[in-house]
Amino acid sequence: MIRLADVHLDAVRAHGEADYPYECCGLLIGGFGVESTKTVLETVPISNAREESEKRNRFLITPEELLKGEKVAREKKMDILGFYHSHPDHPADPSQFDLDHAWPMYSYIIVSVNQGRSGDLRSWELREDRSSFDPEPILEGD
Image 1 (cartoon, rainbow, N blue to C red):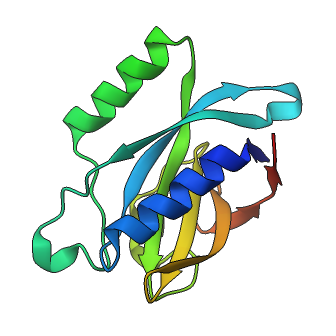
Image 2 (image 1 turned 180 degrees about the vertical axis):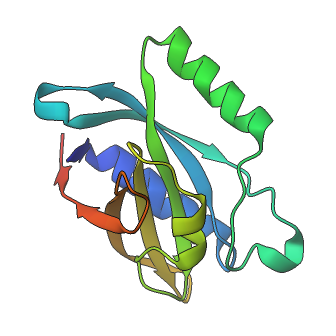
């Protein structure tokens, strides 16, 4: 399960709305707690590095941006817990592309943004065998 304060949920939603009609993306940084509960302490928005024609339904975090995020996390004695991105005018469910490019252990938060307004926000974890995602419970609030 993953815990996010309202400020982090609001940040993910706002980023999705700001980047609409394109996908937004970013990092979830924090720590692991009791029974592997992930606690997000910071969201790090990242510019979608995809070509303009692909940004509507794909996102890309460059290796350089990921390394910068890892450095920020390390300096704050935290870990990268996962990633977030938006689905413009689509449900907050992982796509086949999401499945093909995900890594086990990380959380994948997807926010649906319909006509510029954020909607459903869900978290997913990739199965160890990489066959599919499982819903991950979100604990909300401060």
